[in-house]
Length: 423
Image (cartoon, rainbow, N blue to C red; front, side, top):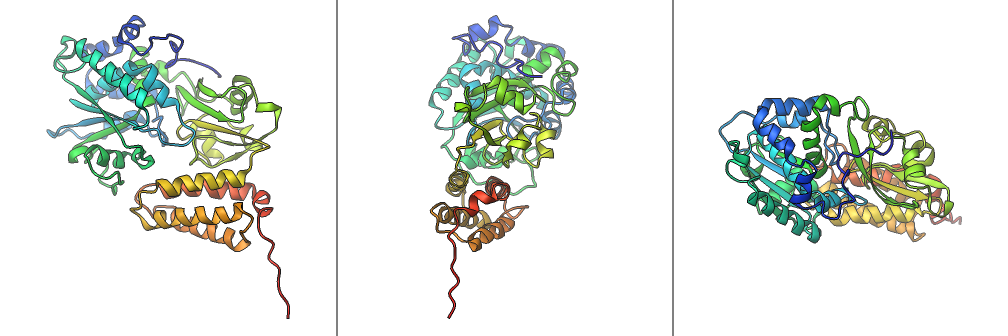
């Protein structure tokens, strides 16, 4: 286990974002293979055999998702989710800026797999540099006959457009992203119907994350069976982890799935900043429940291990917190984020995130009481478990309740001591 590169092999090249460089390292060779030697069904099966799971958060098997697209005469759409709004997450931005042609190649292969002839790359509006780079890469691909009509003379047509979002966290949720792409408010949709049946313009649609698409050319090149030999049985492949916080060498690291978290933190990232003790780890973006230092030292970087600790690998954002971290302040900041980013469509989320944020502010300022803690837990129960259209309310609960439970003493110390008055 440990460092292993598939996606970032050529990260050191200053021109890695150009078509010239990408083709010099066998870029688009997988596309030629997919278009000339493979049927759509063979592509889907290869991706299924690889065991590739979505790299955006939920970890749903990618091949299965493609397989849900019905055989119909309706147009089929392919969307890349490059919104990346999860706090602590910055690995997709790197892929967009450094390897846009890897993303494009993966999308064209996926397009053939689901019989799509129109795709969209939806990128977070703040990623100005990334948007410019991807737009340039798309232009290069069109000029080289890699997009448009009769790609590489092999008889397949696929058009690709770049769309800039407006910077709403909620648009990372696929149905809200689809609404945004249609020019509507970025509000999540009720499911069913799922996007595979009724997505963009009420047509069958596949939405995958940037890193997911970037894995596809490698799977086609090496075959799904070979890809599955990397990582663990149920979590194959490599994964990009965006490591931040109190660590000596923060950054983006590509490691084999199943690598011990201890190895990632102390060997690859050099340990805790200023040689302080490790207090906690948020393993997969702010909405993944916090792990204590003891839990982190037993965890491995794969879906099953993190799930066994009642957390998630999520978006691949690993936030390291040292003994100096004020977890009351940290939890309040996260609740404030979710309160701000709620689209307001569902009452439990719109009202609940706001109340949780305000109650945590009271506790942070030393004005909270035990009743406020009880109210946060009561609100949490009303916000989770399918009471809202999308999981944003659940995300707020997962960012708050486990921290308040596992680090109860830290919160208790900030509570105002109520004095009972006797007459």
